[in-house]
Length: 449
Image: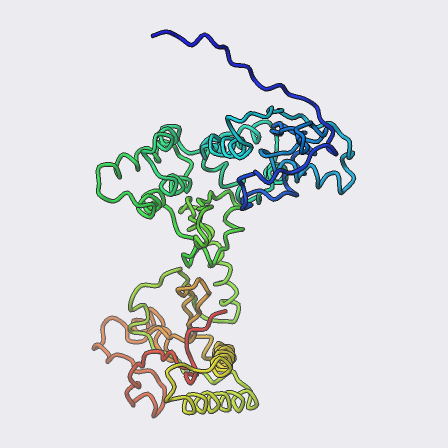
């Protein structure tokens, strides 16, 4: 096949004063999207104009050149230069590099504009991620990168995180073997070997959804919503050297995942010990503290009934709040949904009642001397204190270990088991244990501190 003998001639570039340029009505771009004109102007001010404008000579009715040039391709760049001129950062007569396309009946100015926009290939996201990482490795901080490319610091952090995913998975993404959403899920954990192992497992299954990836990558960690994490505090955990796994692409990941469970348990135990000592300082005979108390931990123990810790005024206020809440509910009983004002007032009443009912019951000093307390965590990570439990061996009048042998000797007949000298009340059976009611009227209950 014979090759064409005609050599191509590229259009010459010229430096044309800005005041000799005018926008062409032949520009096919009508809708503006993406980077703003002001941002592009700042980019040009920092890096200069990196892409020339495409221009055509403007001719008069006779066909003679007027000395002006229209811009059919590069309208946004022209407007950015115009913005710099208007803000007096660029001289009106400053030279602008332009590609001059001579008049040719074979193609129009609209073709210049259309060709420039259609033939442009957008940067692959992976190239952008890697470019951000290169800038970061060269010493630019997240804030500096964000400022230079007019994006948020969070976006910079996300792209840097994506660039640090296993190279094997990045290659799969480049070859469309992995979607961007799937790649995002792998950023939760930086361990490349673990990332590749999870992908290998997912590739053999029918579930390759991002949530499955996140679940597998965090299965050996503790969610930030865990009550131990809430009790200790994520800041305290990290200050102690704890490693966090975070999903930068989730609107709410619950604070992330705590990877060092042993450290979290130690911090929880240390703080519980401090809180237990504070409760012990109230004078209790014993205090048992654990993040999770065993089921039935109070079986066989007698529960003392302390007096309400509320003053007469507070008790009256509490009763009034209960009546008000009942009145609001009765007033809107037929409504499918409470009005906003009524719902807001009920929420406020509930908060006030909760604050009153969290008051610790008051016990007599002699009761505190022979009773104890359990200290644990509730589901939301708040300290829960259950005061006023009496062990059988600590009941008033119970014999101390060794007392019976000392009194009866070893040769005499066996004496009956001692009965606590509690008077007439001792002969009466103890009232049945009643479970704590999660209602404001209970004088005793779990007492978050």
